[in-house]
Image (tube, rainbow, N blue to C red):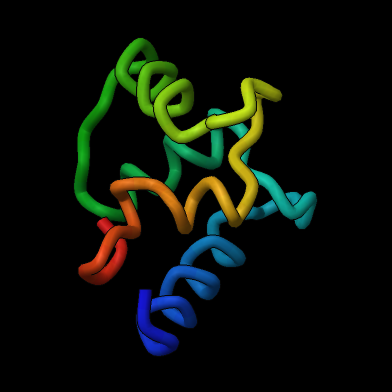
Length: 77
């Protein structure tokens, strides 16, 4: 990921991390989806969370977010 895209990813992550924990929970993932115009039900939000949560701790760190398909070689999602 190039630096400009990384900055965009970090900005997006920080804006969605409303509790300031440094990780996204399923509610914050749902908020991100809505902001991107995706209308997902709770089951689909859970599935997205599972796909992004590489280490299985029920949170998505910035590293997991950045390394996901959501933030691949193109601008985030």
